[in-house]
Amino acid sequence: MSESQNNVVLSVKDLHVYFYTNQRCNKVLRGVSFDVKRGRTLCIVGESGCGKSVTANSILRLLPELSRIEEGSITYYKEDGTEIRLDQLEKNGKEMRAIRGQDIAIIFQDPMTALNPVFTVGYQIEEMLRQHKPGLSKEQYKKEAIEDLADMGIPAPDIRYGEYPHQFSGGMRQRSMIAMGMSCDPKILLADEPTTALDVTISAQIFDLMNDLKREHDTAIMMITHNMGVVAEMADEVAVMYMGNIVEYGPVEDIFTNPAHPYTKALLRSIPVLGKGKNQQLEPIRGSTPDPFNRPKGCQFCPRCDYACPRCEEEMPGEEWVKEGHYTRCFNYREVMADGK
Ligand SMILES: Nc1ncnc2c1ncn2[C@@H]1O[C@H](COP(=O)(O)OP(=O)(O)OP(=O)(O)O)[C@@H](O)[C@H]1O
Ligand SMILES: [Mg+2]
Image 1 (tube, rainbow, N blue to C red):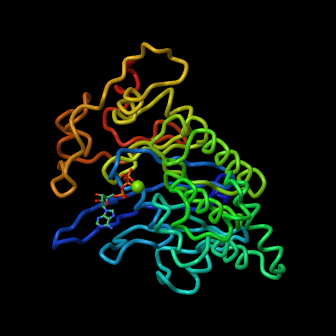
Image 2: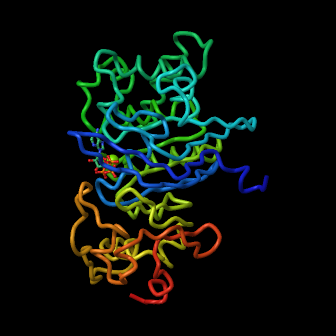
Image 3: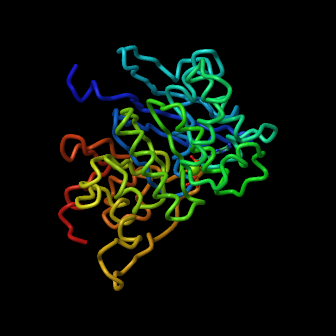
């Protein structure tokens, strides 16, 4: 096994997830592949509805009843070399429950899905700690839980410790959930838009804590975000998603300076870039995302693409390797890369 393979802690291959609602099938993930590496941060970006949360929830098998993993694999590589096929485990079986929170933690996009309204926030953090660090005294658990809240910048943590989720503000709930997710030093942290409801200084503190986790425990982070500024600051690798596919994947520098997919290019043109001054021309991406029940036949981005050719209308491009570690799903990527626009 090569060194790079050794570093892979989670590998998702050709994942297909379909939702069945009102007798219709929504092919939400249509062959998603990526690796998450120890001690590195993978950021997943893409428009609303492209399948980012479904990707994260599939890993921990937290998909709703009306959905199914149809094809593909999700493999977790433990430090001792054991491989666990998460997609084959029983959804709520013992093994899956042991992995959730301990080995792989998730910070949900919506904090109310993670916090239980009938227990105090302090109690819920302690529950996580009890599982991960058994054998401490009651006082020690309490002390650690309060410290975790303080780390998240929650004022008067000793009082807040005894309160219920509904007594917290939205931002405070989000921070408590992050505290729960990070408290057990997971091997993989899946963070779904972790700081959208938080102000800039608090977000910066939380990103610092994530980076500490990464440095001290070699935790791999998979972070979903809309914010390209966050990507620039946090990511080692970036996956760009569009309509259920990763259309470009690569090291953050390459994605920003040498994008090889028209959607990535358009995404970068649609947001302000720090350091380019006040007069930058921002261009919204033309057209809108297609109806998932009425998709284009070939490349999903084709109707909005400036580089489209007749082949794009017929076929979804496969993964074209631009160089080692950087792929794109575009037939015309050479032209895209050569074009200075
Ligand atoms: N519980 C559900 N029931 C039915 N369809 C769902 C459900 N959850 C997600 N979907 C569908 O799956 C697709 C992808 O949703 P997902 O939540 O992964 O988007 P996302 O990329 O996380 O978007 P956002 O940036 O808005 O959070 C959408 O078409 C959505 O309608
Ligand atoms: Mg989402």
